[in-house]
Image (cartoon, rainbow, N blue to C red):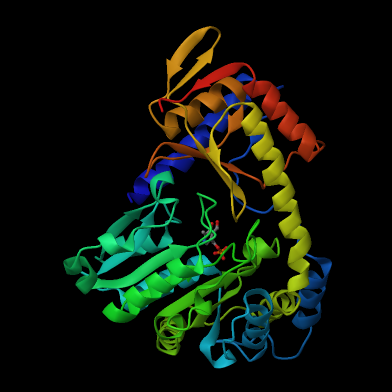
Length: 395
Ligand SMILES: Cc1ncc(COP(=O)(O)O)c(C=O)c1O
């Protein structure tokens, strides 16, 4: 993936938002572009942060942390995913983004290959570029139900591959993987000495299926690490805390590289995140918020005749860009998701994020937050704006 194009995409959206605000100052922008939880974390997590910051000696370098977060993480993996992962195979992170960068630095050298689904969260790919490694893209689209065909990867690529980078529940597609897929992925990685890096940012946020972890596959404990975070599941993206768990060899590599990158997350922050992982029941209300919002958004898009994939996890609806839109009695061709997203914001003040790497799509985020408007009112307003168009799909 061209990350400069990625940046460009977000800059373009920001520019279109500014233009809309300048052109129509009295009209509210409906923002389904933001991918960040806009609710505050549980007061209990904050109380723990405050309490811990008054403890003696907590402002010292934390390095790879003490035993509390690994113990909490081990409890969380057992409770939520039925995974038995010893505390010795867990190290804290300053969020998944930081952990992805550290794993890239630990494992990639010029000429190595990263296998990554396309589209994807971009950090691993960006680091591959910094480090002179190549990316072998595994396109995910409705043709493969958003699960990559691992059996199509050439042997010559597998020989040079150091990392297989996956993320399920997946952003932006909303797909969930199943254990058979994780088993195939783990076997492939085991056979070719590839580190399977699984980004579980949305791990417990599954709908209509149980949360699954790659670490449920016994083979994965030799070749995989899973990255978890407090950001999405505890409404705490600014806390910058999570953990890396799994194969001892790779957790050790991560821990060593990490000590050269940072000197550990502030212990009170680790304890606040640990409080969350010790109390996975806090996730239930957050999960039901996204489930309800995704249902509402889905019903709205369905009535508006915009095609999309029912999300099985995460907090997004991945909607297909129509090939043409009729507005004011004129059909306008939509070249791709970018063109459709620009049209939506310019004409109707509806902000979504385009994803054109494997088909023409846009992403609606269920994190929308419009002060003074209920979830129902936001969706009703979206429906009223979309009702001014007809959408045409070429297939
Ligand atoms: C798939 C995915 N991975 C990782 C992250 C970042 O997680 P963290 O806040 O733990 O760095 C995000 C945030 O948007 C994400 O969507």
